[in-house]
Image (cartoon, rainbow, N blue to C red; front, side, top):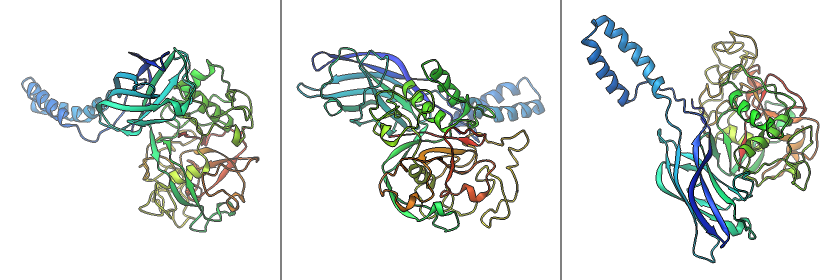
Length: 458
């Protein structure tokens, strides 16, 4: 399992004159936290170290002592090697193409020790980096998902498309490197209960087209929540709940829907992205405090910031690219404790777990019986815990009959309602409530020790 998040902060030295009066400063990535990768066997380099250590140690110790020492090394070496260096972005250069072109070339070098592909985002500031809140989305090249290690990476920014009147002497470009999100590709899927075994709210099954987006691999952990929460309260945000968690690597819980969307805005601002949620339709005041019934047209859906998934986005992502299955995995339509953290009950024919009740690995302490994020295998899109662990807040208002009138493309739920949608089931849910099609709901002010969330962005 990996828990890694990277944010840019260090100022590079390249400067350019854009539109004659616009110098651009490029910022480079630096890690806020380190990799944690648990390997089952030592890498080749570790084996070499073991052999050398064994040779030297053998000259000083008995064979019995040597065996014990080597056994200990075999256990600890993978853990020691798991702390790989964070991705590094260097040598950033930004320059305008030949005038009168308003295309900006951005070059950089990217190195990642473990070779993972990265999610690369460019953010733009017009106030010397005090806030990266310029709406800038017209980037092509080595940007977005799937960017791999290499030199002379190239991004082209079409500044004219984003802002034809952009004119400033204090513009900075920032690159964010993050491998904690995965791409959910655009496409249609059959939304609803294809097994005809759920409630009326899961019917009728209908085809829905969802545009491409990125989603957090993991439910937001208590550690990640605290990191953003601390920044947020120091920067004008207020929350109804501080959030709880069994441990730093368990999902945050005891947070309301209002808390979640304010936290999404704070995460966006902290990372220099444009917030999505505002206090009215003018989209001028970022939602930071109180209970605001944010409406669909108060959301900047085109912003590069974080937000809650719509329930259509959530269900498409949960299905992992496979059609017609009950759960997030596609090799079986049954569930066991080896697949998810839930409450096993023999009353469900598709619950074939050899262990019953709460998950035996997580019920030896006080409730709630959450598990560390990413404790079970990912689905086809690389998403973890889409069944069980904690219910996940979604954007939409809940309406039992919504599927009968839902738009065919990118539905965002009813205009009004009483309950906001929850998806995925929890550690205390029976198998029937962990199916991909299940729809739950809660009032937006409610917190619960089985409620959590994850974020998406364009």
